[in-house]
Length: 87
Image 1 (cartoon, one colour):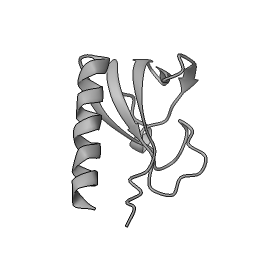
Image 2 (cartoon, rainbow, N blue to C red):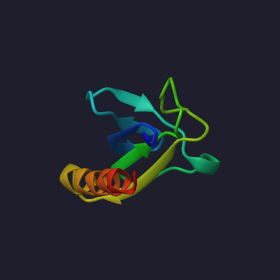
Image 3 (cartoon, one colour):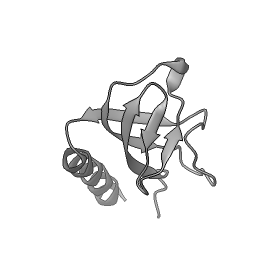
Image 4 (spheres, rainbow, N blue to C red):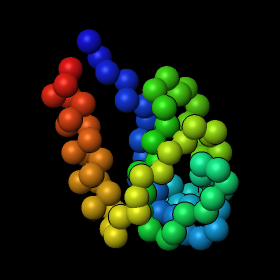
């Protein structure tokens, strides 16, 4: 059985509604309930089955903030390993 935990990407929230994605492009984002996020690194998480991940997705979740990209990557790897051991 293959578990689809959705698509994940580490991003840096710059300010207001702007972020820098994994490819270093600056993009506009929307978070739950239209709130803005504090500056920092986050894991952007799209729901399972998402075929066109974009930062204005209505079910996009942001996990963080983390102090560094490395801290976000460690958290993402820990989550991914948890999924792998459950399958």
